Amino acid sequence: MTDRHLHIVSFDVPWPANYGGVIDVYYKVKALHDLGVRVHLHCFEYGRHRAVELGEVCETVHFYERHTGKHQLLNSLPYVVVSRRSDELVDRLLQDRYPILFEGLHSCYHLGDARLVGRKRFVRTHNVEHDYYEGLAKAERGTFKRTYFTNEAKKLKKFEPVLSEADGILAISPNDQAYFSQHFRKVKHVPAFHSNDHVDVPEGLGDFCFYHGALGVPENDQAALYLVREVFAGLPVPLVIAGSGASAELKNAIAKSNNVKLRENIPSSEITALVKAAQVNVLPTFQATGIKLKLLLCLFAGRHVVCNSPMVKDTGLEELCHVHDDPTRMRLSIQACMGLRAEGAMVERRVTILEERFNNKKNAGMILRLIK
Image 1 (cartoon, helix red, strand yellow):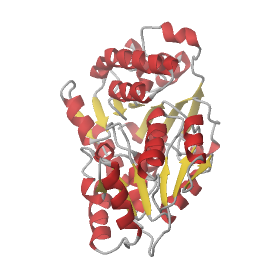
Image 2 (cartoon, rainbow, N blue to C red):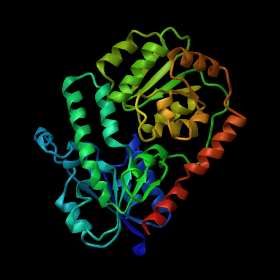
Image 3 (spheres, one colour):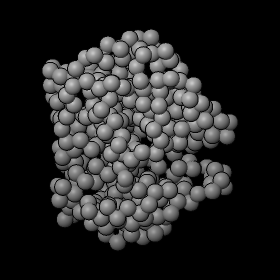
Image 4 (cartoon, rainbow, N blue to C red):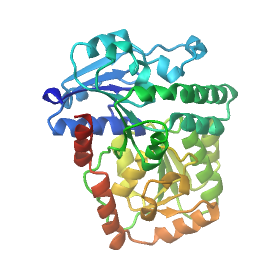
């Protein structure tokens, strides 16, 4: 790679690194920086501030406005893609011959741009996006948003063949690698990047359970409601739910509960502190797409993890969690874990699997070898 320079085009500003997609982007950039790569980061703005902190791990940082507005919904391209286009971005990419890594299908509007033919271009896939949006549509109760997610899923599936322009695809999970390998060449599994260097499971016992997520996302709202109504209703165990954008329905359900509390709009440092303090991190999901970064945080830094099978499907992390799809069995498992210390062979197994497979430095080195 020419003097170890790399352009990275991000779908969002990856600082603060406080939700799944940007966690992977930020800690990937940091790991590459630590290996001596001079990263030129290009960020499309999505309601987040222009973080000066990114300058600590990047050679240059550039920000671009998104082309938002309902008229974009009429475009044949996905809204999440067509809103992230910029001639200014292309002009900057053309100033040198460095390789380009596009983060997610969202950022791939210019992947097939004729002006970039001959450049080394790679894509980091964060999900099979049309599957993800179909899942959001199923979880969404509002008619407008449900229609939007359904239409976006169809457009994303139609747009996906643009990935054939890439010199390589870096899939975030084994399941995604299997899917993309059926359709494209040079697909490699590069595990998710994250904030933890070592497994650090707290000693002693906690006295509550914890669930966290971006509650404005339909799948997370659905998971939180499932916990309040079907798992913790009548259970003699307290649950803390943390996240932003909680729906009125979720707030009402929590208000009627005597053992569930909601913590809204708290910083990521406080989320991590709650993950560590909890006796059980409870993580149901109804979308088996990509890999959930919050699962990695809970396994690296928390005690017990109780989840359902879609949370761990094809991740290789099944044996590190208590996996139950029936709410009654999940309740029993939570109660059993409340008096069980997280120690011994359980922790040793986490160290063996997590510190080898999800080693940021090792996986950044894998990216360098692929791009060279």
